[in-house]
Image (cartoon, rainbow, N blue to C red):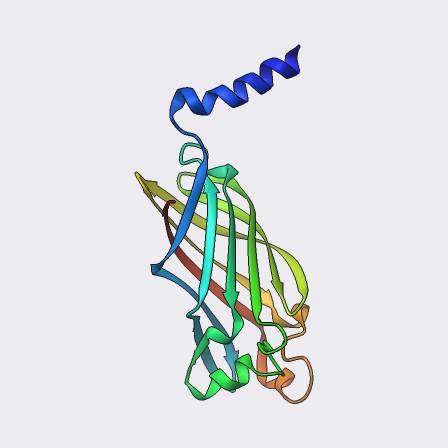
Length: 184
């Protein structure tokens, strides 16, 4: 009997409060996915230009949010420009063989206010790794803004581990995300 009451409560609560979770579309305008790595004695930065994403979120209970982002590896534009070809080439992202990078948000753990710990899976070059990182999520009416950063060890994904590049490029890559979303 308790199971039925709990199930009925779970189904009716969103209807009564008007806060049913729903799909949200990530907007490319006003959003960015960037990376930086120490290489050749300085910092190299880049931005992924082609990506798509969606989320399911209840604005009243953001800790239940789930999101999926698919990034086209070949869309990485590096600064300086000469680094772009190497970054998407066979020694690093190998975009021809592994065209897609995936990010799957699994959960948000509240830290207080608009701060959360995100738990997600990142898949590159056929390898998936779980990550956790702090982020801020603000929901204001029909707009949500998520911002955070995490570090990846490129060797965990087989990126730049062969040849002289392994010694010339730092292993820690910082990824910064700033995403805006609206209900779809």
